[in-house]
Length: 243
Image 1 (cartoon, one colour):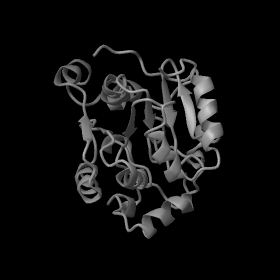
Image 2 (tube, helix red, strand yellow):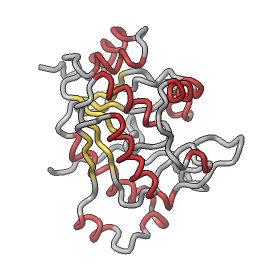
Image 3 (cartoon, helix red, strand yellow):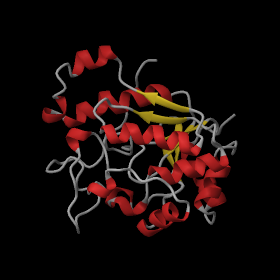
Image 4 (spheres, one colour):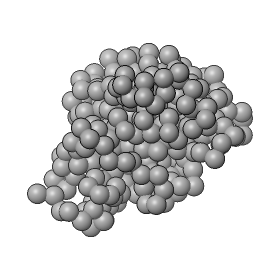
């Protein structure tokens, strides 16, 4: 049985793997009894292929949860298919809001213009929570360099009330990500070459100019920098949903 104290468990895991490389953190995380049932959540975005490649090497049958908001770029949907096939990922699960939820919350597809938080909530946060409720931990591609909210990120962190998050790339630098892609000849998301270093939904993502923060194209001009699935500790938290 898993230790119910998330802080204690996260601290124990961070001490255990503090000096391990990212792929070893991932390799051990998928079998460590302190983590229980684990899944990878991937956006198949600009840098996602790094973790997806690592998973293909250590646990190709690991559940990979991909949220299709039904507002993604066509290039992202095609890239998801390409990468999954190329890497031999055998358990990619596509998650979407139901037709009933869309009809109730955003029948004309314009909610993102008036309330982007609500749009992210019902298109991403709620569908993901339904699936993640069956897991004890989930793996993310977050990194310390991405923005201030992630500057103190550790390999393992508690996500109250019942889960842990695993961040194998927490300590990587931007050049580490690029070097890994080059060394392993991994396919790039086609929008990166068009000026999109961070890729979300098509209506809420814009190209980034040289010198801008890589995430500045997400919800440009708004007081918003995260979709909500990574908010804990006093910020936006996933709301509990029924199965």
